[in-house]
Length: 449
Image (cartoon, rainbow, N blue to C red):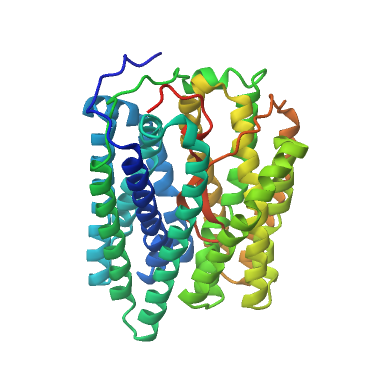
């Protein structure tokens, strides 16, 4: 299925103005991610919910959101403008923080409401990716895309770290003054304000084409039929299995650090930042390594290297050892994530990429939820003592190792030497940022701005 022919928009503005606006808006988005989204699970713990229920805040709403985001193409068509859709979506995303602010000030909030708010936030967050990637292609000239998106990616990582540090310091001060709920309210106010500011900046972008032509649609059923012969479907099976294994432990990093180990919010912020720094340190080296040994080999290194990551949390005797474990884990996660992205671009045809990756996002969130449900069940049955967490972390590591041989079934396609530009879409406590590829920097453009 193909989308209708593009409809014209307003006259193109200065592309330099659009680049500045895009960079500033992206940085504000990342501050929101670092200061707001990063602390959703910690907020659930502060409201008094059990470790296993709080941990599911990181996966259950995301699964719901990933499923609902499949309706994004319909919603974009209904609105009739990529810019208008992005402005509306970002405004709704900012508004999601309002009930969280109220709950923080009141010191209580029903669990179902917390799940619902985060699910709406996740739906908006995930649905903006395809719209933004399509729209930005019409704004950034082809000749500057690689350089521009590379610099933009580094600035966005800085925005995440700024938001993360701000949140950790505010919560640490709030805990010391016994004003923890008010501290969370301040975090969510900052996140709300910066996202509304980002919405305004989006409205100031130009829109030379309202609805550019889309890519070919591949249904989930058609994708499943490729399991026997399609490299793209086999790759997605490996990534789903590996992601499910990882989510057995990852959502419970926050309860493990704050409740079980009794660390401060400042320490929690530093540990998450360590994983982000680890990713940033090796990202350029990992890109060059992929060109030398191939994306599949890089992905295998990342898969095996991250397997014992959760177990290192349990083994670490003090905060510095835990920070070192996070730094190393971030390095291997960079190898896994970049290897996975490169493999996706090698095995998934460009005309189908947006559709296939949208389906994969929904399936990946389902796999992550099922993995986290397994971890929550173990903690619910065994309790949240040291031995229960050890079992969860060991199961996660073993399952990730068992998923690794599935990669042998994937035949890599021709490699692409072009640099890979990414941008953060969320922060996962214990793993740092989750990145998505910036498609205009690596795809053949529909048109030049």
